[in-house]
Every structure is written in C-alpha cells, then in structure tokens.
Image (cartoon, rainbow, N blue to C red; front, top):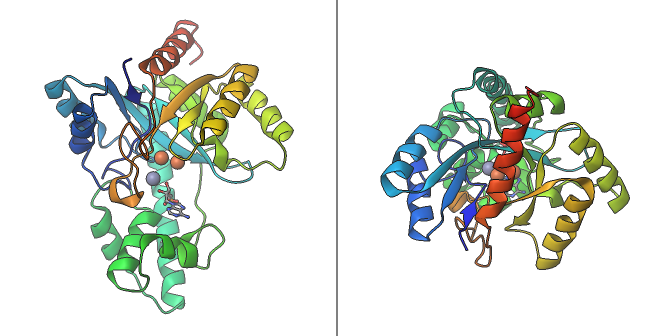
Length: 289
Ligand code: AMP
Ligand code: ZN
Ligand code: FE
Ligand code: FE
C-alpha cells in the first residue's frame, strides 16, 4: 500500500529539521507523498518542493492555522494549497504579525517572573519565519531555567501558565475560505484536543463546521490509540467528513515522533490524500471560492 504523511513541521515554523531534511526522511522510509504543514507560513514549501523533485517524492504544500471558538485547542491544516495564493498569504501574514505582540508580552511576563528572555534570543533560536512558544521553551532550557522542554510548558508557557499570552487568530470562515480559495482541503488536526464536555456536543459542532466547509478530520494521528482512530473514523463518516492522517513531526521539539510513522505504528494510506484532493478539486469545479 502506498503511504503518506499529511501533517509535518520544519524549521520554517517550530520544527527542528530543515524542509529538505523532512523530505529526505519521507524518501528514506518510502512515503509516496508528504505534506509540509508549518504553522502560519508557507516559507518552507519551496525548499521542500525542490528536494522532493530531486528525490521523486510528491510534496503537498500545506500549512496549519490555530483557531478559537471551541473549548480546548483547535488547529486546522490546509492541505494541497497553492503556495502563491495571494489571499492565503495575506491571511498568514496577519497571523504572523499577531505573534510579534504576543511574543513581546510573553518575554515581559518571563522577565517579571525573574527569567528574562530577549526577542533576539528567541528569534535566533527560531531561525525561520515563525517564532513561537517552542522557541521560548528551548531558550529556557539553554539558560538552565528549566531542565527540559516539557517543564518549560508545564511551569511557564502552557495555556493558563504564568508566561502564557494569547494571540490574534483568524475567524473560522476566513480560514476555511483562504484554504479553499488556494485550492486546498481544510482538515481538523488532532481532534482529541477539541474538548467539548460531551461526545454529542463535539458531533453537533463537527456537523456545523462541516456545513461551513470543513473537509476532513485527522483520524490517524500520533497521539491517537487504535480505539481513538476508529471512534473518529465513525464520527467522520456520520458527519460527511473525509479522513486525514499525520505524524505532526516536529523533529526534536516533539519527542519520539517520526515522519510517517509517529511513535512507530502509524500507517497513513495515500488514498486518504487522494480523497481529500478530489474533494478540493470538486470545490474548485463548483466555483465555491
Ligand atoms: P504557539 O503556536 O507558539 O502557540 O506554539 C504551539 C506549539 O507549541 C504546538 O504546536 C506544540 O508544538 C507546542 N506545545 C504547545 N503546548 C505544549 C505542551 N504543553 N508541551 C509541549 N509542547 C507544547
Ligand atoms: Zn508546532
Ligand atoms: Fe497542531
Ligand atoms: Fe502540527
């Protein structure tokens, strides 16, 4: 069976492997296709696509966008987008600008707690297009403030912790319109992080979001158990949603998670991508831009 990975990160956002390196790993383990889905940026796509052409891997341009409006954490991947699409690029620019104020606020909070971190230090740690909490975490580890990445989130950077600051997010309709307008499929990433109090509320929300244009949900995901996967598969079918699958590879910023295989057992059929691609194509054909 041909396999793929529809959710990965590189140094263009908060991964630690270069875009070309992510493609090389995909080639090494024999994936037919790889989506690079960096947070809030398409800056890694060109490098990844060049390497993919050399190696004969199909590179699927993508991105991951953080949204709000639900309890827990709501991330959406746009898969198979045109990286030159003007509206999508403008939307992602808006989100990255919002990060600048937020990062300054987190730096201020850390300083007030007695652990100063400068914007120069986090920018140097990031080295790419997007500066986020994982870069703050790495700086705190390097300075010996915390002993590891996890402690940085548990003590300071996690939602609700004392150095956390929120940031501007795109409204859901804008995110979906930007992804569809760029020819991509809109997918709910790691659905287990959306934490409605009851399964019924999750299902009602998914139905409404599907009606608003959501194309699929990640049923196959590194953190999902086999029973999670089958539960989300049933849910997707009931809501008229397609399935997606991804490792959410971040290099050293996400422990024991490898391209294509997650913590070892992930298998993502290439046919999931074909179905998402076909749905995105039919939306284009139907002119729902
Ligand atoms: P940001 O987009 O700057 O808010 O950072 C979000 C990223 O930080 C996520 O994609 C994860 O890679 C990482 N992250 C968020 N919460 C945690 C956590 N509790 N432990 C470890 N990493 C986390
Ligand atoms: Zn990330
Ligand atoms: Fe995510
Ligand atoms: Fe991700």
